[in-house]
Each structure stands twice: as C-alpha cells, then as structure tokens.
Length: 176
Image 1 (tube, rainbow, N blue to C red):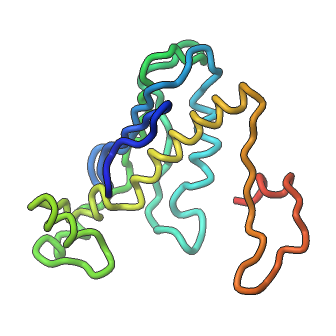
Image 2 (cartoon, rainbow, N blue to C red):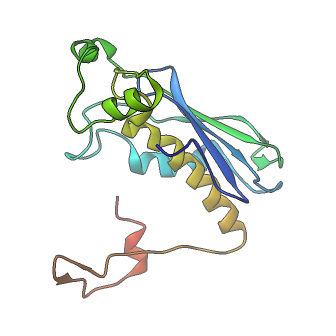
C-alpha cells in the first residue's frame, strides 16, 4: 500500500488488520451539521459484506459500522469521525502454516521487503478486509454530497466488445 492516509479536503486514515481486533477509519475534514447515522453507513457496508457472493471470501463478518466519535445525535460535529468494524470471524490458526513461507499472489513478500516484518494472519493490512474502512469513509463522503443534492453515477458502457444497450440509472443503485 502506498500509504494509510488519503485525500486533501476530506482526509481518511484507515487502520487495522484482517485478524486484529477490527478495521476502521478516521475521517478528518467533514463539515459540521451533516446528517450521519450508523444505519446510513450500514447500507453501504452491506453492499460489500463478505460471503454475499460466490466471488467473495467464505468468512462471515457482520461489517457492523460503529461510529466512535465525531457525530452527536445523528449530526456530524466538524471534528474527526472515527468508524470501526470489529472482526468477529477471524480464524488465525488456519494461517499458521504460512508463518514461515510467502503465499504467491499475496502481499506477504512485499510487506516483508518493505517493513522487515509481516502479519501472516490473513494478509494483515494487505487483506481485502481493509476495504471495509474505505467503504465506511465513502458513506460519509456520500452523506456530504447528499446534503448538497450531488450524486455520482457510473456504469460500464462496454465490456469485452459487448455494449450495454440499456442505461437506466435507477437500476444501478439496486445492483449489488
């Protein structure tokens, strides 16, 4: 990873490991008086929840977003917002055979080369679990944009020579 902090006006710092206590994000630069609740964040978290498709991990994490600071009575305060998702389904013992070997296609060897240490339990910071923090930050960014009646929409026009003939924006948000 190039770093843990991203952004200019709205800065996010992600933290945590796949098999640690949890993962989370600190968001700095969010204006005050933006409506924001755990339920609003949870809508986005549920879209990335592990185990919800055949392409994702079999791990069953609730991905329950908990706002730890920066929000009072459902309104942002203008101070840093901290959101945490506790890890509840991490089986570190399954990774003990990899404590002394590098797994192909994973970040193990690059972490060892860069830092001289690595967390072999599920990839540590290089795990897809880290994306939960980015999704939570994205939900906060969406709340800011919603207050200004700004929406961002994107879709694939063509893939592998197959063109999308139907482009209905109301269907995009319903697609998991």
